[in-house]
Amino acid sequence: MAAYSYLTQEGYDRLKAELEELKTKGRQDAARAIAEARDKGDLSENAEYDAAKEAQGMLELKISELEKTLSNARVLDQSTLDTSKVTVFSKVTIKNVKNGKQLVYKLVSEQEADLKAGKISVGSPIGQGLLGKTVGEVAQVTTPGGKLEFEVLNISID
Image (cartoon, rainbow, N blue to C red):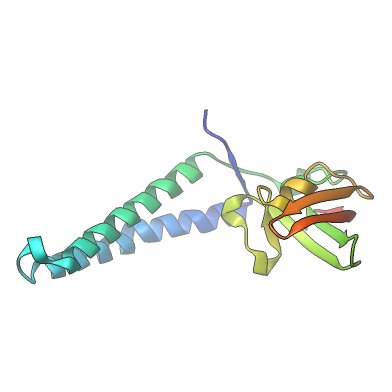
C-alpha cells in the first residue's frame, strides 16, 4: 500500500504545474538536444549524445516520481485541522529552551518543505520531534548538531 502525501491545495497545484511543464517543454527540449547531438556524427564516440540521453532518462524519472506523488496525494482542508496538538500543516511557535530564541515553523510534507519560507518537513528531525506535542510541552530533538529542546508556545493554522 502506498503512503499518502498530504499537500495543501497550493502545493498540489504547484506540483501539477511542474509536471505539466516537464511533460511538454521538458520533453521537447530533451528531444531537441538528442536530435542536435545525433546530427553531429558517430554516436559511438558522441559524449554530447550520451549526455542528452542521460538527461532524458533523468527527466522521465522525475516525471514518474511526480506522477506517483500526485496519484498518492491527499489535499487537506487546513480549516478543519485540530490546533490542540502539532500536526501536518500546523504553524508552530517554539522556543529554544537553551538560548530562549523563538522560531515559527509550518510543518508540511516533504514535497512542500522550504526552510527559507519557514516550512519544514514533518519528516525532518525537528518536525518529527514536534508532531503530537501540545502547547507547553517540550520536544527533545536530536539533530546532526546535537540534542535540542524546544518548548511549544503556540499552535495555529495560517
